[in-house]
Image (cartoon, rainbow, N blue to C red; front, top):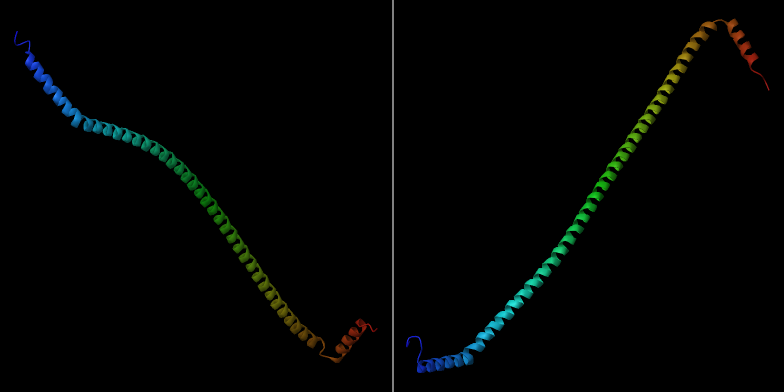
Length: 164
């Protein structure tokens, strides 16, 4: 039974040594250990708060990014619509300009044709008049070759002329 029951001296010395170690640990080690644990706990809590704040900031940034992205898409769509509208306007203006130029060219061509036609008619009239004079001259020479026919012609002309 000696093995199971310890002696009083052994219990005393073990208790005394335990109390001394407990006192030394309490005096020198417990405060720094507890301080380290508290600072560790505080740093962990601060890290958790920072992580939570970072999470909120990321959510806000994500919302801002989505908002900016939506605005950018709207701006892009607006720019594409404006570009398409401007393209249509340019195309329509080019068509109008081409039509105006074509109409002017046609009008100029008509004016040129008209003036050339008038010039040709004038030349034809001049030629007809010249030919008529030549024919008339030849006819008159032939008809007025004698004095009697000249006298008759003068009388006819005098009848046609009315005196005032």
